[in-house]
Length: 109
Image: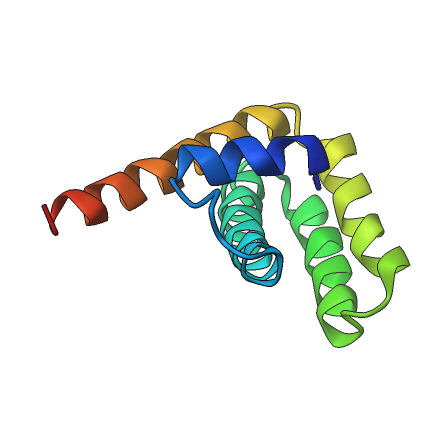
């Protein structure tokens, strides 16, 4: 679910394109985590009990060894294979994040 080409657009959409490279990487990792958790939450509700169990095992294995790219990829592969609306969920979670950021900024205006 990592889309390197979308990152600059996302930062611009959020008004954060002027951050240093280090700050951008940190922020994108945090944003990615927020979006990822939202997508997994939404996807979870579409899965059968058996699929939820399988996803749960994959998530636990990935969390236990977060440096292992293979385990993280296994979660992404599972989601891509079992969740037909995955790209829609990603887009909606990104949009929700943008709206939340815009709402928070408007409180300071």
